[in-house]
Image: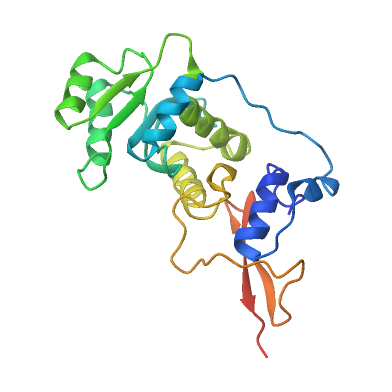
Length: 247
């Protein structure tokens, strides 16, 4: 797994074993077989703010823009919206010319009234105009603006953007806007439905119906089953599962 998925760390591999293959292995044990020991770093955060986020995580949407550059050096802006409680990517879209009206339309596609969203976290970029915030309030949302020069206040979405870069766009060069959308659509489906998240226990934000938590039975795979891998973004990542071996 480490060789075929170069961006994975020991926690990700241990979670893949537990959730997909039913084998409970400590990340420390996995690290013994990893070529590098990169470790993990966590930035400082406000205890008071984090307490609020934990208490209201199921009702919080966090959003942010980041830049993607194509093979022909065209610049596109990617807008992402994250459900903080589930870590699910609720929405993304790509544009060459972001505006407040375009951004508001993205929120309309997410905030439909079917989910109990109450808060929207965004930074103080001018694209989040007063008119946009007023429209969000009319949808029943409370807007939480992050302080100046405090990206850690939107840490969940900032981490998502970093993950998209480290696990996807740092390895794939989009040819055009259509190609960029296709890359992000496939990776986003993997992120939501196939990628284990350590902050969830580990767990998967939106697990498929047929994915059942495998109970650990030691360190062995059942004799009548084998490990099957499915390639994501032509071999950049893989999803693993157990399948019965044909008699």
